[in-house]
Every structure is written in C-alpha cells, then in structure tokens.
Amino acid sequence: MKTVKIIIKRQNGKIIPYEYNYFIGISLYKKLSIYQDNVRKLHTSSQIGLYTFSNIITTRGINYGDNGLDIPEGYLIFRSIDDKLISYLRLGIMEDPILKIKDVSYKVEAVKSVDNKLDINSNVIEFKSISPVLIRNFNDKKFYLTNEDQISTNLNLLAVYQLKNYFGITNSDVTFEDIKAKKKTVRISSNGKKESITTGFNLQGKIRSTPEALSLLYYRGIGSKTSLGLGCWEAIK
Image 1 (cartoon, rainbow, N blue to C red):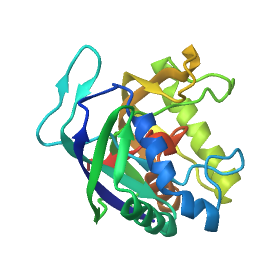
Image 2 (cartoon, rainbow, N blue to C red):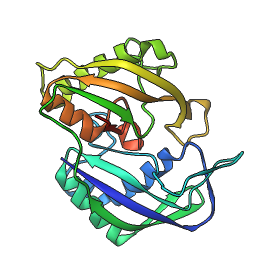
Image 3 (tube, helix red, strand yellow):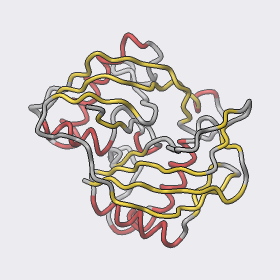
C-alpha cells in the first residue's frame, strides 16, 4: 500500500469544471491500461476500487468563476492498496504525461513517493476528506445520500460490507463518529443525464476500527466510486 504525490502544471486551456474529479479519474484510468492488460481489470462489477486520489491541492490558491475553476498548477495525492498499480501508473505517465480535464491539459511534472501520516497502531483516527465522499444509501442502493443525518450509519454499513465481501475481513466493526459534513456536487458519469451529477460530502470526524481495516480504508478511500477521485482522506491528528 502506497501513496504518491502527482505534481501537475497547466499546459493549455484555463477553466475546469467544479466537478473536475471525474475527468481526472478518466484520464488516470487510461494511464493504467497496461495494468489492466497484465494484472486485473478495473471498474468492473466484481472488482472493488483499488485506489483513490485527492482534489487538486495548490499553495497558490484557486480562482473561482461562474463557469468553473482557474487552477494553474498543484498536485494530487494518489493512494492504492496495490503497490503494482502505483508502478504501472508511473509507467503510464512516463508514456503520456498529459492529464485532460475536458478541454484543459495538465502536464505531470513529477510523481513523488510520500511518507504517510497514518498511525495504524491506533484504533481511532481523526480525519478530514481531501476529495468529496460519495455515499450510497445502503437500504436502497439505487440512490446516493443527500441527507447529512444518515452519513455515519451508511458509511459504517458500507465499510463493513466492503471489508467482508472484498477483503475477507469479518471481525472489523467500523464506526464513523462526530461527523461534520458539507454538501459538494460531484460528477459520476459523462452521459449528460441528470443522474450523472449527484451529491457528495466534504467530511471531518473520527473513524474507529482495527488497524488492518483503517489501513485499507485509507489507501482505497471511503464511500463509493473512489477511483473517480472520491473518498480520499487524511489523518489530522
């Protein structure tokens, strides 16, 4: 399990959509074509997301406009539970260092390994999301949550289900506590239908579980569709 920092600089265009995570996700997915050919297929119904990544983080600030964001440069935090995937991502970026966000192009200037701040010896971690969290309604899986009061319950149920059914971990309760949430619009498809944009949340609070479960949730993200740049989080303790 690894974390890298993907440093990017804008080459062409200017304004990117507010819901830009989806487009970065598609561009990074294309960089992993060799991984899919040689290791395993991604984005299938039988394969849980193996990675997540953050919003674009920049020290120069972000200019907000009516139609989108002006971000000249910054970096992404990218995590995966599979070390091989990180290696193949580096290879894909070497072959083509351009990330497309609609009509705007960013060049990957560097991919740097990152020392993680996660204390896996602790059973409780104070956290904040660094990309929006998409939360499926566990009792009606056709819908995603829009009600902030149901966040903790559904994140708990989803995390336990994923750990049990995809990783064989049956003895790990997961509890999200003291959650503070702010709604954030996210894109999950490019089909143009109203369902392609839905509600996510920027979160802050605590996660309580076993070190093994916390580590998996850290490196693959929390919630749904993490490979689209959703559910990435950082320890703030």
